[in-house]
Amino acid sequence: MVICPDPARRAGRARYVRGVAQLLLVEDDAAIRSALIRALSERGHAVSSTPSAMEALQLVVDAPPDLIILDLGLPDLDGYEALRMLRAVSTVPVVVATARDDEADIVRALDAGADDYLVKPFGAGQIEARVRAVLRRVAADGKGAEPIVVGALRLDGQAHEATLHGRRLDLSRREFDLLHYLAARAGQVVTKRELLTQVWRMPYGGADKTVDVHVSWLRRKLGESAQQPVYLHTIRGVGIKLAVPPQPEPR
Ligand code: CA
Image (cartoon, rainbow, N blue to C red; front, side):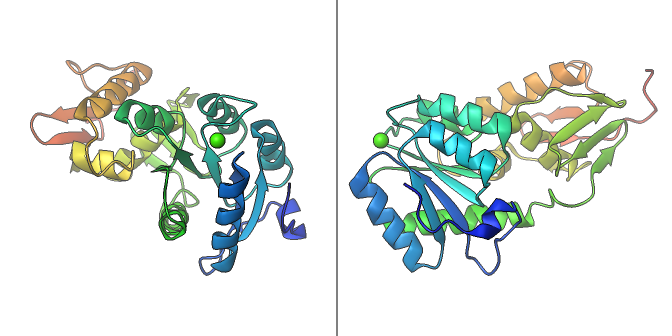
């Protein structure tokens, strides 16, 4: 089912102006779907919807929305798998709606590329506020701006591409976001709490070791280690700092 198809969507242009967005709702529960469509439409958003993950993937390719609200419990595809497939073809922000509320499931969804999550049941006001917050963040992210260059490291937020000495780094979305966040603040110590809040969107709870694990993956991909850091420095008891290497590195 597709509601309010808009020719502008076909052109794939950025349409998020004055807080109104093209949303794609992927939800197989007909009652939840119609309630959300009504609530989000009343707030001025244009809402398309489908009960199928596979159809959602097709829609995202054909007519990218500004944001996707994705139910993790879909009949045709596991929600995490759907998220991974989505991330392979698109950087469109995703808010996951899930009935599972334990931290491991939420971390898994965020690591698979979700930008935010809501635990069911939730009110229309809450999801609309989350949608607005994610869209504001994406707009303010600076990811549309100039690439960030720190030493031999170059991060292109628009292309979601990171290179070191001109060689492309194979980073997950979360790794890229973490590196991008740190690189945008090169030379500053960023606390793990800030990273959990800003990169993982987990202001409450959230385990510091989530950050540690991702930093260690990033180090491996950058070819450095905690013992011999080049870019990523752990400041014990404070946080993580991305530093400009003092000298040009040997290639
Ligand atoms: Ca469902």
